[in-house]
Length: 62
Image (cartoon, rainbow, N blue to C red):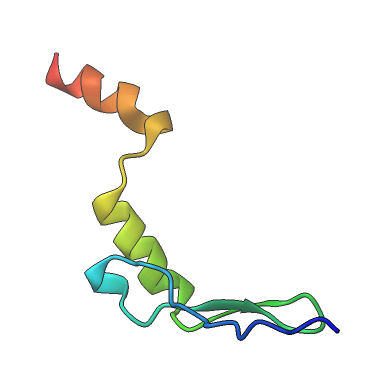
């Protein structure tokens, strides 16, 4: 007989500004998030540099 291991669900590590962020997929395949997409986009705009627009910033400095 196989014994089932008790799975301890650990929360993933996230940035302190996104504490409580959770993403799940329901039975219909829809993605459900605990945060508004606009809040996530604002966070990404502040913290992540856009590689496609990097050349434009370099041109402004020259």
